[in-house]
Image (cartoon, rainbow, N blue to C red; front, side):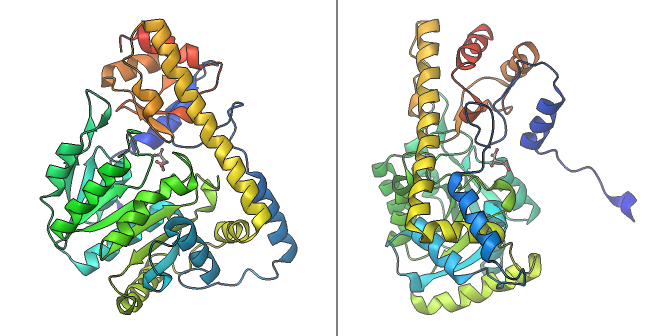
Length: 394
Ligand code: LMR
């Protein structure tokens, strides 16, 4: 039977992780997978997470199942963190999921159940796994213009023109903040324009919020999602705790379906429970418990928010150091976009050959589309990267 299997397309981000590990050059620089690393190159457990785990260890008396959609207090805490007061809690159906990817997968399945002919509009470019999952599920994707290769900002006019082609029953997938892979985000007024366009089309937004707290701050990064959820009758939100709580391997995420009215919420909630049962039954709880404890305890929450803010500021500092170093070395402002991008990633705008040269000649690893993980840098290797970029003719 198994001889009928055939090789699946390689995930470029995972392949890059492997290639980096196999490289024995001591000066190698990993700008690949989206994992935060501090100045020592480590991904530490956050202080509040350690404290919460300690409390769980002391007080947890059972590992029995929690609930088909996870724990109610976790879902309430995440609805508050992501949506704030933007929509009434009674209209939000929610389910805990294994990470943000689990939330996306469940959301895509829900879309397909609701409308087998749904098309999902995706930014060009988008996170490769969005496309892989949608293609696996047989859902048609429609790319919308997003990244302007000349300015390295957002092609807002192109985006709005393409989104205007969506129809009721279609879904528009948006990155709530810190666009992956480009780092180019919409401004507040551009978000308003996108909301107005979506309202005219009748299409449903689905927001992938994987980096809340990594861009302009915890509250600021949620604003677009909140506005979208409040302004449109229906909305899906897939949120991840991997990055902002640094609990990658605990697989902690949430899918929220915001209904037009509280009465429609019941069916959405049942659908989310049904999908959880089918795909993995009870969702993981350990990470969700950590998050719930932190968000519900004023001291832990303040400490977590402060450490997250440090992480955010350190990435911003690396961005401006890299932009300034490149300006000084090249005598041109053409890399200024690095300082205005937000989140972990920036698309450098190098060709595939230049990316390969960076890897071969300089041991610099970035994704083939020239996405760089800014958190892979530190104050010492920024000048090394800048030199390599210029020597490669970028
Ligand atoms: C990334 O884009 O590098 C992260 O979201 C990690 C992943 O799973 O791809």
